[in-house]
Amino acid sequence: MKKLILIAAALVLGAFANESEEFEGLLTTPGCAAQGAFADCYLENYACGSDGCYKNVEPGETTNPKLALFQYDTGKIYLIDTSKLKISELGEGMNKSGVKINGIYDEATNTIAATKFEAPPPPTKSFFKGCL
Picture 1 (cartoon, rainbow, N blue to C red):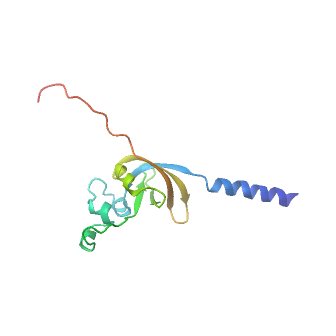
Picture 2 (cartoon, rainbow, N blue to C red; picture 1 turned 30 degrees about the horizontal axis):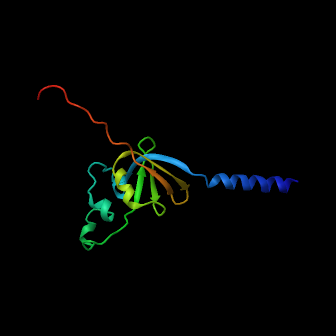
Picture 3 (cartoon, helix red, strand yellow; picture 1 turned 90 degrees about the vertical axis):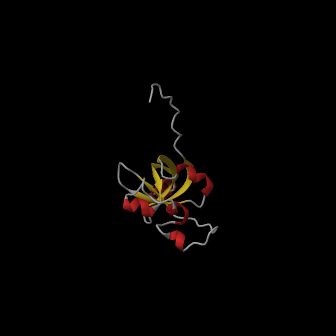
């Protein structure tokens, strides 16, 4: 009887271990997040992965740079596995805070296997009243 209960408990815990979680933060590259250079991060980091990488990449060659999610409140940097997402859609959230990523977190590699991506809404339009 004890073995049956232990096996059932292991199956239940195993089912919850692969449950998707939601993470929110700033979408950037691991290099920019490690340096803390968010607004000052060079655009080439998003194209080929690091500062000065354009010197080693042929024009027109496509690369898939690694992405990271930085959380301001905890200071944690999570690597993101984007193999299940369309890379073209991720451009909306690049270097923006408030990006939400759903996925399964692997604590051993500190990687989120992303299954869903949501960019923050664009800022609302405002009308300036007054004279310059």
